[in-house]
Image 1 (tube, rainbow, N blue to C red):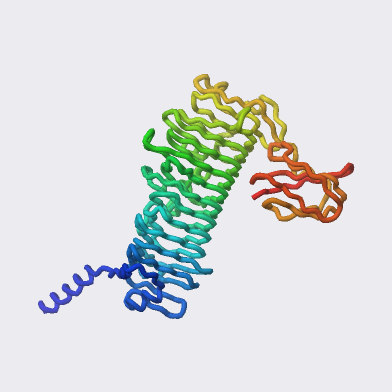
Image 2: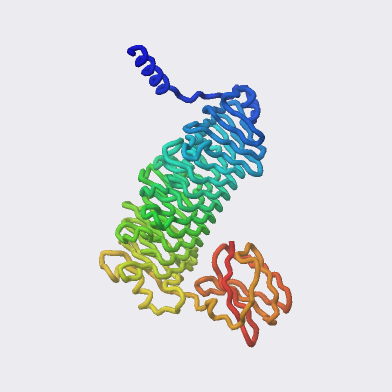
Length: 492
């Protein structure tokens, strides 16, 4: 009986110390496919048609290239990690990298400092995310979904560490962690373009979907033309945050343009001095999921304890957030001046506690805010505009907001006198086409503040008109001497 007990105990202990084996490519400068690795190490990868299974950790040696260039599914066993010191290229029409058992995620990917990594047309799911330590990282037209905490990354499903990584045209949705992050003290200037980002940070920790620290001094962080949608069941998840916690030792240089940011705890926030950014043509709406105005809910929030933050904002549309724009401490924003910034920001129904707050200047700084639409959908007088701006008039310790002149659109799609008139495409890139069966003679295009930005003569029948306008929302008025119609036009 004693011998049997000892034998059972030894067996249990043996299983307790088992760890996954690691296969490392030969490090001979070769290029290896999954089939090559399966032939070299059948215990690492098994193959059945276009289905591949990874059963051991995989390490790409520094002189080697692993190439996946055919359509396939790679299923990875629980807790396994792919580490790249060399080159990993994943590019075909349709590649899926997933867990062998969705209830037992794999650990994800770790890309070491000198590695080179390129993903295209790939679905990455049910793993532990992508830890990006290299400067040479590109991911394009991929789907990254349902990845979990506790694997290769803890900051975000794509966790960045250096360089100017390229993150373009991806769908990043419903991961336990935020979508994209970098460390607070690590200089990274990614290019984040045309991604659809929704419902990330399902753990509902106090982090936004894009959460970045300081940038490289000579390289601009670019967050452009992304859609960032929150999950309204989550009350702690913001849209975009960029923070410099290092003071003069750090730096933020950014462009945040043409994004749609909706249904988050807040739209975007920027923290810290030594910060400069252009924020233009963003649509920022309904960022109020927490519902606590003392804790957040701004469309745009700027906060710095010392001087040295300057934001230039134009053409943004802020609607139904708990606050429109809040400026705190020593932060500063230029919302329109008589020089280089046209203004043309639009505000509507940003408020809390029964009050509307388009702009809350909680600083001693004087803010330039000319040529904006402060109450969308009406031609306001000066007192009506004053009522939605909080500044020195409301508290003598605060700085002034110089908001004259102000303006707003009087056009509306409800003004239509012609039914069943349309153009295509909408959204448009650089031209629109329409059948002018109502004998309109003129097309006038106005921006959201009511400023005329384009006039075209048009003829009866089919017309194709070049728009040549920046991205944004416009109103297109088709008219002749007797009738007219107004249609909303979106330029991508």
